[in-house]
Image (cartoon, rainbow, N blue to C red; front, top):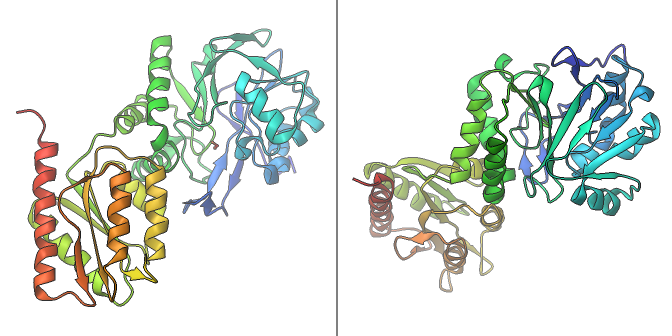
Length: 404
Ligand code: FEO
């Protein structure tokens, strides 16, 4: 396999030896429309070192890429920056093949590797600790909850290179290994989607991580994450984007998320969209029959308003909306305004009532009462929807205007 699956040179002494997953479309609920990569890296030093393994199914691909540079048995050290199975599923098998002298992880990583993979004999490293690789050294920085309690990043000082595990990554399969070889619009979209769907609820931890790395006062010439392309030019661009997203700064964008049974709630959504646009908001109308929850999450990343609507089915909100709102609630977006709406046949309109409750639980500032329509919206109902849109747009304007 080493004649087919080759390593890619990152620097003269660091190689990418990861795996490209062109197939994956469901990453625990996140629609990975462009696939992903599981990045592993090889540092050539007196102590040859492997940074992170990969998902279990890609073990042979990773070992083949390593073998295209060095015999895998020459690896002395393995560093596990993060214990989630997309980076550690193959770790046991890699250890069996490589038989390294030592495997390193954070203290929480040691616990996680024991609990999840029943791995023993892992050496714990602490925050700020430096490890000699003989002629070179690496430094560890713990980044708890970015992404898991065990997460840490590893800095290779002589190359000014940060192995950043999930942070600064994206789900994007490509043969291009570097961000500067890819389209900026694709990078911006996928980096934002990754942040919104993986890191948004952990924004406080991301902020602490950024502060911690900034305090180290180290140059970041190269950022090598565990997913997607490597940043080797203008690394400040992705770092600034993270700082912006972690702040959860809201804009004048309003998202109308809904589903419909016989078109009634859809007509309401369209009328709300018209009102929002007439009031000056930038509007995205997202029908859940043809939108994915993870794309809604991406739009929410910088949106200022969330309007959610559903018909009532069997005395419950329509199931696709329950799915979308449950997912969004878990991502803990902060500082949104919004409202609920929906149609119903008999009963009191349980669908929109349940949405109202979820929006309250999400601490969304509710701009007005829910708008409900019995069976099919009348002209008057649609006018109320339009006016709701206008009212939300007005409040959005006030909220995003900032200090005079
Ligand atoms: Fe890519 Fe949190 O694992």
